[in-house]
Image (cartoon, rainbow, N blue to C red; front, side, top):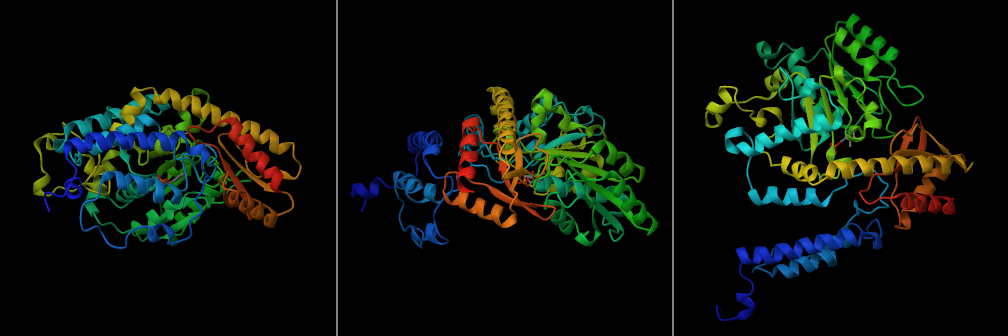
Length: 479
Ligand SMILES: *Cc1c(COP(=O)(O)O)cnc(C)c1O
């Protein structure tokens, strides 16, 4: 068969093919992103339809890369929800800049495992540097800096991992740490509002603490935690012989971007030796803009903190920044040292082994996408983008206020507006469905104190005021 040109053309990928096809793929991605606005925001496929368009069994012989790329057009792209579409107003943004896409490609090309310093020194040291750069860019407290006596930061895949590692560190501290490695967790109690992220319940389950020991702290009419209610719950638990150990202050809740008052909650928590975790996965990145630095209020008292460049800074998923002011507790909870991972660099304390800061052992060179993004002006681009989104949200709020069929259900200091029809939940739900069915926009629904709300989340890299105005005009038309 070696003489058959069709077969010869189908050998496995060579270095030359990689150069050629790689460039073709970059072109494909750029074309996809540059023409995305011509597409519907959502796919029209039915369940099973994507798979049905692909062969049921793996190919017996290599196929030309061009065929794979053609299927990206034929099958994959039509089967997507286009998160990079400027009229994607659903969930939260997941915007990605060109520079960060290239950083991701570079990471894949290097193919290193950065579990410890010795397995790739540059992977560790660039990550530490990026965490320190982000402290400067976001105006975060020095106690999270790698040069501080007890803090530091690490890149996690997601805020959910940040929540879990924070719970594990707090559990370690509350149960006597090294003295009692497993620890008796039966008396531990955690606190959050009903508005906090689902990763808290999941984290408590994974940590073996369970959700019966999660207290739902009442919130005020702005959906923020009530410090007085928190203090009461803590006092009652202490009186019952329990051990309050962890509280989550959400700075920008997923549902409505409510801001728990960390400056008032942290002192109550610390009086009882609790760990204060600040979850600012979505909104923390707003601190890139000096006039929005209020999102950091209270961070001086946080034991741990996280925010996601993969939501609002144009860094491709996955990139969550996790900082702690107590790395002893974090490392106490997560360190492992089998013989094959021992190294002199780590044992002398000269190097960081990030495997001890996270759940998995293996880790990718995620810092590259942050480094590429920041060095090529991405932080400045993100500042402009954030200001544009906040301004557009303000415009939208004015438009909503001027139409008495609608009302805003929650404060909207940043880039999310939760709105509803005054005629009731059924009308609001029907409006969301009708709007989404057009394919021209995508909204998600939430429930705020029993009322249905349409979440208008403004965060696309290319989303401008005109997209927001168009989305609003569509809603008005469809009522
Ligand atoms: C998005 C979000 C999360 C979850 O983030 P992942 O990185 O997807 O796990 C957690 N908390 C808040 C406040 C969020 O906005």
